[in-house]
Length: 282
Image 1 (cartoon, one colour):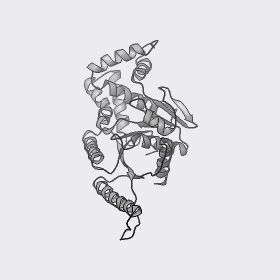
Image 2 (cartoon, helix red, strand yellow; image 1 turned 180 degrees about the horizontal axis):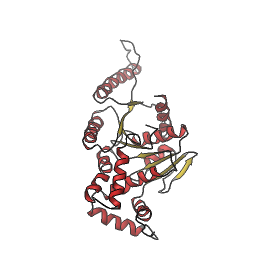
Image 3 (cartoon, helix red, strand yellow; image 1 turned 180 degrees about the vertical axis):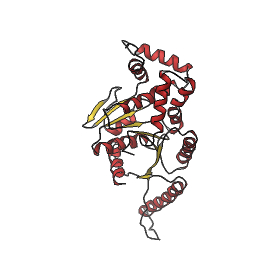
Image 4 (tube, rainbow, N blue to C red; image 1 turned 45 degrees about the horizontal axis):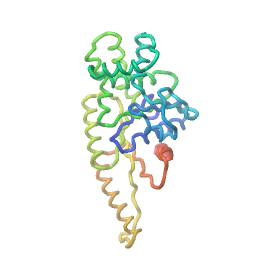
C-alpha cells in the first residue's frame, strides 16, 4: 500500500480511522518518502492530534523532515481550481468564494465532493510528494466522494470539466496508483458497515485497490484450563471471551492486516507511532 501515490483511509466513526491515517503517513516517512498527510473533511483535529501537532492549515506545513500536513478548505480549493484550471483571476478574500460555493453546491450534485477529491488528486499530481495519505470521510459518506468524478462526467459529457473528471476517475481506478484503506474493528456494527461498503465498491468499481485493516485486535492469551478466582482470573476470562468474539467477526470479514489493541495510557501521537510500528512489523 505504501508504494502507491495515494492512500485514502475510511472507516466507521470511532474505529481509529485518523490514527491509522497518521500511522500510514509516519510509516511512509520512515521509509524515506516525502509524505503529505491531509484531512479531507472537517477541521482535521483527529489527524492533527495523532500527528502530534496543532490545528492544521489549508496550506501544506512541514511538521518534521519529510512529512507535511494540511486540511482541505473547500472554498480555498475551489478558488485554486478556478485559478489554475479555468484561468479565473484570484479574489481578494475567500468569503465571497465560500458564499458562492455554498449556493452553487446546494443546487448542483457532487460539487462539494468533486472539489474535495479534486484537491486530493491535484496534490497527488504534483511532484512535491512521493505519497499522499488522506484521512477521508467515514464509510457512510466515502462513496459520494469516490463516485463524484463519474457523476460529473454524466452531467457534463464534454469540455474541460469533463476532461478533468475523466482524469480523476481514471486515477482513482488505477490499482497501481490509488488504494483505499477501510478501517474496522471486530465488532458487529463496524463489520456490517464495512461489508456494505465493500459490496458497493464491487458494484461501482470506483477505486482500483482496497485493503481491509482491522484495528484494536486482541491477541490470544496463554492461560491454564482452570483459571484462579479473583481479579487476575476475571481479567483473563474477560480477555479470552473478547478474543473469541473478535475472531467470530474476523472470520466473517477477513482482514488484510490486523493491528493490535493498545493497552495503557497513551497519547494520540503515541498511538499513531505504535500503529506505525505494528504496520512495519507486519
